Length: 71
Image (cartoon, rainbow, N blue to C red; front, side, top):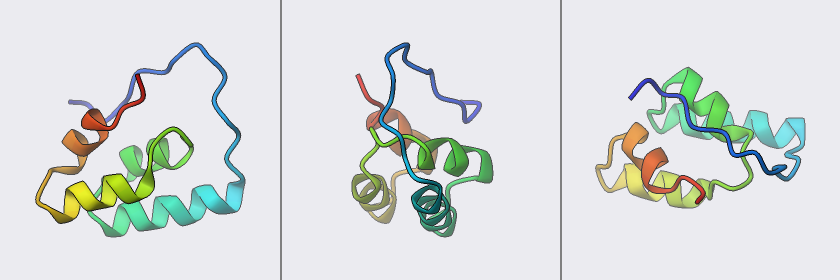
């Protein structure tokens, strides 16, 4: 996996800049690569806690992102 996620044509909810920075920081600390953390942090459709829980249980970050990708 190259770390990039497919973008959906529908409009995504806006995520405030400070929330994006906070989410990116948490994802990076949890082991997500910088590019994947940046991409996920701006997507409100991803549940941050679910991502972190999967990684805490041993799931690789890229796989956690794929598992929780919005339909």
